[in-house]
Amino acid sequence: MTEPTTPAEPTQWRSPLLAWPGAVPAAGPDTGVAWHYGDPVTEQRALERGQAVVDQSHLHIIAVTGPDRRSWLNSITSQELTTLAPRTSTELLVMSPKGHLEHSAAVVDDGDTTWLITEPSHAHDLTTWLDSMRFAMRVTVSDVTDQWALLGEAINAESQDGEPLAWNDPWPTVLDGGTRYGPDAPDHAGTDRPWRLVLIPRTDLADEIRQRQHSGWTLAGTWATEAIRIAAWRPRLATEVDHRTIPHELDWLRTAVHLHKGCYRGQETIARVHNLGRPPRRLVMLHLDGSGHFIPEPGAPVHLEGRDIGHVTSVARHHDNGPIALAVIKRATPDDAALTVVCDGGDVTAAQEIIVPSHGQAATRPAERGPTSRQARGTTNLSGLARPN
Image (cartoon, rainbow, N blue to C red; front, side, top):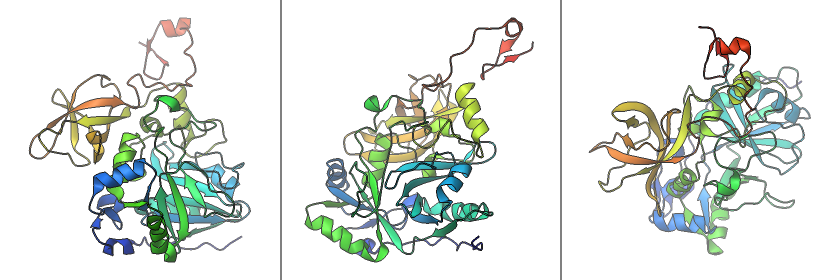
C-alpha cells in the first residue's frame, strides 16, 4: 500500500501565450489563458471548421496509477470503468450522499495510468478526496498539472498508438449504460461539435502551438470555445453546477453516468429520479435579444412574468446566433414561455431552446404501472408514488 500524501494547494497557472501579440486574458473559470487573440469571430469560425488550436493549459490533470486504479475509480464514481480500454474516452461524476454533483472529470487511460481532467477550482478538493478514499487499494493519486498541459482541437477522434494521448469528448452520444432527457444524438445541437484535449509536456506548450500555426491553423481563445460549447448545450462543472445540482437537470446522464453498475455515492438519487421522479430544475439554452446591446452576467436572475424561476450559468456572443446563454430554471416552466433576464442597463427578453423538457422524463424511464386499488384511494405525487389523503 502506498503511503498517503497531502495534495498541494491549487496553483493558478498563467500561460506563456498570454504574452503573445493580441492576447486578451480570460476571466472566471478560464483565468490563466487567453479569452481571444484580437479577432474572436475569426477564431470561432476557424474552430468550427476544425482549423484552430486552443490553449487549455489552465485545466488540471490528475494521474491515477496502480493495478487497482480502474476498479477503484469504478467503485466510487458514477461511471463504469472496469473494462475501459486504453485510449478510450469517457467521463465521470462524484456526488454527495444525497446525489448533488460535487466533481466531474474527463477520463482516458493509456494502459498504465488513468488520466483525469478537471476544473482548476475543483482540482485540489477532488485530489484530496480521491487520496482519502484509497484505503488499502494499490493506487496512487497525483496532481501532475505542473508537468503536463492540454491543447484543445476541433477533432472527433481518439488518439492512436504513437500519438500523444487525447481525451475525445463523447458529448452528446448516449454512452453504454447512460440515458438522455433531451434529443437523441442525431438531432442534438452538440452533434456537430467535435472537441478533444491533447495531453503534452508543459514545457512543449508553445512549440506545439507554433507547429499547428505553421500548418495553417488559427490560435483561438476561450471566447470561441465557450460560444461553441453553449450552442452545443454542453454542461460544465465550473459554470452550470451549484450546491443543489443533480445530473438529470443538465442531461449529464448521457455521458457521465452508468445506470446499471454497482453501488457508489449518490446512486440512490440517480436511480430514484430516473425511475420514479422528475428533476426539480432543467437546463435550457436562451437566445437573448441583442437589440439593446446588453448581455447578462453569469448568475443573472431569469424571470417569468415577474417571478424568479432560475439563473443564467454561461453567456457568450456566438458569431452566428448572437448573444446566447445557458440557464438553469424551474422544471415546470412551460417549454414555450418567453423569459426575461435581468441585466445591467435594462432587462433582455429570451427565447428558450429546449435541452431538458419540462415533462422531466428520461428516454429510458420505466413505464408507469396502472393504479392499484390502494393508489386509487390516494393522490399521486411527482415521484409516481401514492400519498394517502
